Every structure is written in structure tokens, then in C-alpha cells.
Length: 89
Image (cartoon, rainbow, N blue to C red; front, top):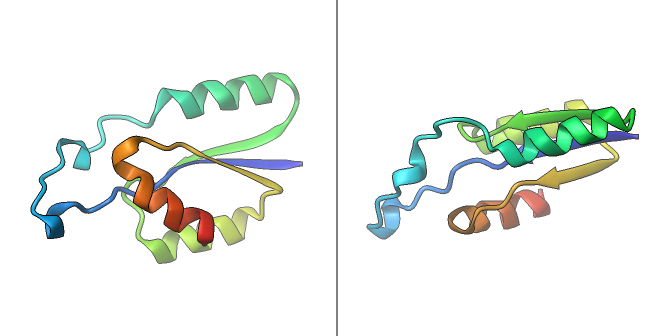
């Protein structure tokens, strides 16, 4: 079983006139790293990818290339529109 953990692309709030201080990622979320470490300890095949700066074509290609059985998505409140878009993809 292949597991893919994703930090979704950033949500561009500028068209709405709302600057977002989180538009610059400092580091990938630790939640994904912690979950990946636990899964690896359980001998699961896992890949964690920070897609923060990916465009949607690259996101789709990456998911198709990985061809995972399970996808886990990190979701912060300000990024939920992109999480919804990612789940539909």
C-alpha cells in the first residue's frame, strides 16, 4: 500500500484584496513529517510532498506519478479552498 501525504498549494488571496502573511512558506508542516515517520515505523511505504509552490498541472502530474492507494492532505483554515480543489482533482 502506497501512501502520499500532501501539503497543498497556497491559496492566492490577493484577488480578494486580502494579503496573506502565509504566502511565503517557512518550512513544510511538521504534522506531515510526524505522520510520515509513524507510518514508516509501521513499515508502510509513504511519501510526503510539500506542494506549497506547485501549480495545479504539477500537482496532478505528481499524484499520477506516485499513483498512491491513500492520500492524506494537510489542511490549514486559510488553505481550505485549495484543499477542496485538491480532493476533487
